[in-house]
Each structure stands twice: as C-alpha cells, then as structure tokens.
Length: 310
Image 1 (tube, helix red, strand yellow):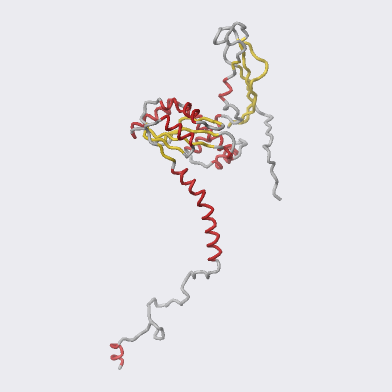
Image 2 (tube, rainbow, N blue to C red):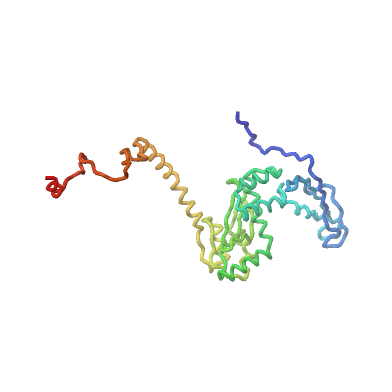
C-alpha cells in the first residue's frame, strides 16, 4: 500500500542543533557616538541546515539611547547572522555554494543534487534545490571584482557585451526573480526579486550596469513588455532581440496539442495494418548462388538459347 504523504510542509526538529547567539558588533552609535544598549528581544532566530549539520542562530540588536541623537531609538542589527544564511532562508550559504558548484561545474541536474544533499543529511526537496540555485545566481552579483574582470575579458575578446534578462517564477506563482547576465560569457551579474515588475523599477535596477564603460552590442529577453522597455531605455543604441528559446517555447505551446492529437490518430489508423516481416519468407540457397526458377514468371529463354538446345 502506498503511503500517503502530508500535503503541508512537515515540521522539522533538530534537537541536537548547535546554538549560536550573535550580537551587533557596533559599540557606539555611528551618528552621535553614544554607547549602544543591547535590546532584550532577538530580532531573528531560526534553525539553519548546513553541510556540517543543523545550527540554531539568533541575533541580538542594539539601539541608540541618546534622546538628543537624530537617530534616537534606531536599531542596529547583528549582521553576523548573514555569514550563515540569507535572510528568510533556513539553508546555509555552504548549501547554496554546493548547489551552484554541482550544477555549474559538475553539470548535475537538480534532482541529482537533491539526492546528494539528502545523503549528506540535508533535508530538502527538488523544488527547494531550484529555489536555492536561483538565489545562488543572484548572490553571485555581489562578487563585483570577479564579475568586472570577466566582463572586461569579454569586451576584449568580442568587442562588447550582450545583456540579457530572464524572469524566474518559482512554482508558477509568487514573486519573480529577475536575473541579469552577460550572454557571451554566461556571467550572472545581478538579481532582483519583485512581486510585479514595473519598467521604472527595472530601469533603476539596471542603472549601475548602464554606467559601466563597456560597449553594448545587443540586448536579449523574453516578450515581457516591462523588461523590453527597461532594456531599450537603458541601452537605447543597442538592438534588442527576443530570446529564441523563449520564442520557440511559445510556438511549441500551440503546436504541442495538435502534435499529440496527430500521434493518437496515427496510432489508431496504423494499428490495423499487418506488421512488416523482419526477414524474407523464401528459404535461402545453401550454395549462396542466385538461380532463376524455370517456373518463375520472370524466367524466359532467349532465342539464342532455344537454337542451341535444338
């Protein structure tokens, strides 16, 4: 009997998780110089799955208590928690790095990465592996020095860049993750997550990359109007093209039902036909020579042969 799995997310308990309590590293207010006071409630607390096991991480913030300060009561958070995981994520940064490396360098599929993580004790499904991979791409945008080197090398080799934007929607709903990448080098540069993108938001996001001192050969995207408007506004002199993969996928959406119907109809029509024989029914000649049978309708004596026989 097949076990019925719960539809809701199962509750995970890590009783042996190591506890890590972090405080804000600042001692004085950056505006007035007054000593910061530790706030009692923790501004965040969560259990994070890492490659070395689960850890419980909590952050304690501080606040300025100087009533004469322009930032009186301002909270300063424990940024050290970002060393363990991204905000609102319960998976460690080492898990993101593992997923990115396995997919980019080892060319493993998401389901293969999921199995590897499960074998290492990380509880995760294929869907969340895909989400973390998209977070990994966006996180790479922070590696500015390395990214700049790759872009400069691409310009030196190709004479310019081709910018592309792809919008990813996890599980077909929720917020969209927009990823900016350079086509020729395949370099992901930045990511932004928006509930519903407007052209103005995308233009503002692209502003730092518009100011880069590199020639832009072209831009590439799907058919979303907000993306096209933002790219044409940011790089007005560069021609824009729709991504061929997206274009062909749009065509296949209309063709696939017709193709499926045609396959079903051909199966019905051809099922009644006799099967094609796999070998000849005539017995083979053991001598290997090819002789004509005199009774065969194809056998025929020439006049020369008749005269010789007579």
